[in-house]
Amino acid sequence: MAKIELNDVSLTFTIRQQRKVPLKEYLVKGLFRESRNPRIPIHALNHLNLTAHDGDRIGVVGHNGAGKSTLLKLLAGVYPPTKGTRVVEGRICSLFDIALGFEMDANGWENIRYRGYLLGETPKSLEKKIDGIAAFSELGAFLDVPVRYYSSGMLVRLAFSISTAVSPEVLLVDEVLGAGDLAFQVKARERMRELMAAARLMVLVTHDIGTLEQICNRAIWLQHGALMADGEPREVVAKYKRSVGPSGAAHPVGGDLSDTDEDEPAARATTEIRAAA
Image (spheres, rainbow, N blue to C red):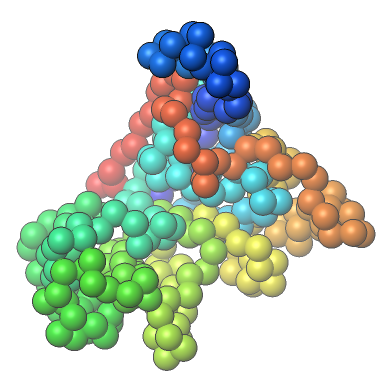
């Protein structure tokens, strides 16, 4: 059984507010004094309550900076909640930032093993899949080459091939991925359809409303890290569109820190991730 449960979950980061220091002040106060730049809190997610079970296909909408990608990272365990509790039951497959985290001095084969183990594969289970991963990537002899010599497209192809070889129960996707050239993208889209069909529970972040309404049976709308609506996709999308207004301009940004250098959350809260039996 797959399950996601968020109870009054908030996520706060603290960052230093940067300010220019006049040369005179810098010299008078010394070079080694502690920075006086104040630390300010950024509330990425605010008091979220969400429950999802087997069969849910949840699409997430919201303006840029609403907290969508941050929510996925919290569900995946990248960020622990600052407040509240998170329970995730089932094997997680996360498809976001998939080209990050390679061992750059290791070759393609070695990275298949490293990432496969991180995704929960055992040596025995991975050996059954490794040839299929290699074939799907279409990298051939380049798998014997350190990945630091790969192009960005080759890295994405390898990462996608590894990440989608698992059998997920909880699938977390940030946009429907495009990987490699046109021919490879056709294969990638078909692989994504198979994964989405196989997963017991899926959470999809996308700006493609048409895709969301076709794939998902439920949608949530985030704004400034808060849950504004949860329900049937067309109804939630309609509410979101009305909030944007006729100009198409989103409300002021606040919340999603996926591109921000943040410190660890100010406080830790209870986090529980249970592997499926």
